[in-house]
Structure formats: structure tokens, C-alpha cells
Image 1 (cartoon, rainbow, N blue to C red):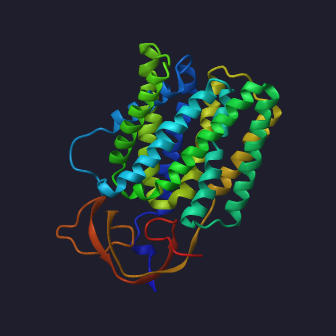
Image 2: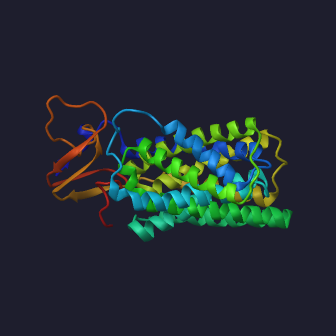
Length: 352
């Protein structure tokens, strides 16, 4: 059995968690701002501006930093664009115009619940006792948030349900698009943002939606650049390291920042059900963040291409000179058995 620890520069779980938290912070701050600047704008128009900003911040010349998008990725990219860059932001924008900013922000926690369940169903990612407890807490917390919205008014309740629909669409986007995490994240975000913005803009114009004032439009595009463009790039890099379920779980920190910002912007105080629901969601996030996964496992011989480093304990093939940082090319792995902390990344999708 090989000794993994001396060869590893940093824990992939710690790195993936840090990237997912950065993604969460960027996205969480954008939600109440989208509500603030999107007043009066149509939901598809809002989605177009958000993902237009995401595409703009991801446009850069030069060679790809990682495995480039390929022709065979086009069908998957089309599906995740429809889910994550058209349906989800449209549902979120519609819901934000009808519900409390605090409730809407906290409702985004439900995305982690959907992501973990879908990742288990589609990719067989493991769900241990701690994750199961986290899911239960998030499920009850989400139900309380929706119930609290309905208690306030029917319109707020429908808005909360629309935000829930957005989280399901984003969760499906996360899970179906997991193989795209092995590609250059800026290419993925640029293509997804450009296609999503074009589709949403076309639908919005055909429905005669109102275009916001110049200042609001620029502000929404800026929200999209940070909260969707930069956030999604970080999310894809995290997903590459720790899988769809764990990235989605850590991403659940985003709603709490959004709720805090909504309060700072003058949102009315939350009711008892909202506070209890948010507390249960926070417990779910804490359970996810403190999860550890380490055991002896074996890797079979494999030859493939993906973005990788030479300080992660799995890539010791020869280079002359040795590249620094991430790079992508076809390479071969020899059989090996070892013990180390890991998530369900490209090299750790074994059964349990």
C-alpha cells in the first residue's frame, strides 16, 4: 500500500470546500441585490442580464486552462444551459418579486438537498449517516420556510415555491453537468452564459417584457458577473475535487449571507418559522462541512485526459520540464492502493 500523505500538498477536501465557500459567498450576496435592482423587470429579461454578465466576465483570449470543451459536450451543455441559465434564474426572478428577500435567500438551501439526492440517483455518490442527518434538517427547514411564507400571504408563499423550483433546476444543472467540471471552467461559464442570455433575451422580447433602466440593467449584469460568472467558475473547480453532492452541500452557506444582506437592506424582521427554518438549514450545512471521508481504496490502471496537478498524489508521470500548476493532456495511471481523505472526484468514484 502506498503512503499518500507525504506526496500530497494539500487536502483535496479542504481545497474543494474553500472553493465552494468562495462560490457560495459570491452567489449569496447577489440574491438580495437581484431582488433590489430587478424590480419592474421581466423574469426572462433579468435572467438574460444576469447570464450576460456571467458570459462577459468569463470571456478571455488565449488557450484554455484545462481540458477544452469538445463537440461531444454540446448536448450536455445545452441541457444545463436550459436548466441553469434560463429556467432557474427566470423562476428565481419571478419568485423574488413576490416573496420576502430573507425567505427567498434561505430557501436557496434546498438546492443542496436536491443536489445530494440527484447525485445519489444519477452518479451513485455515497450518502453517509451525517449527510442523511443534514438532508433531514434541510428538508424540515425548507418546509418551515415555505410554510412561513404562506402564513404571511398567499403571494409570498407562491414566490417561495418559485424559488424552490429554481433550486431544483439548479440542482439538476449541477448533477447533469458534473462531467463538465473536468473542462476549462471559464469556457464552460462563457458558453453557458452566452447561450442562456441569448435564449432568455429572445423569450423576454417575444413576451414583451419590460427592459429596466440603464442603471438597473448595468447593476443586474454586474450581479451576474460576480454572483453567476465568478461563482460558477469556482463551483466547477470545487466540483472537480469533491463531487456534485459535497459541493452543493457546502454551497448551502450562500443563503445565509443573502439573508443577512436582505436584513441590512431593510427587510422586515423574520417570523418564528423563518428563524427556525434558517436554523435547521444552518445545522444541515454544519453537518456537511464537518464530514470526513477516508478509507483504503484501490485504483485500477486507466488512461485519460483531464486537468490535473503533480502534487495531488495521483499524477506522478514524467515531464521534462515539470509544469507548475494545473495543465491538461492525456496520461496513464498505474494500479495503486492507498489511504487518504477524498471526495467523489474523477479518480474516486468507487463503490462503498
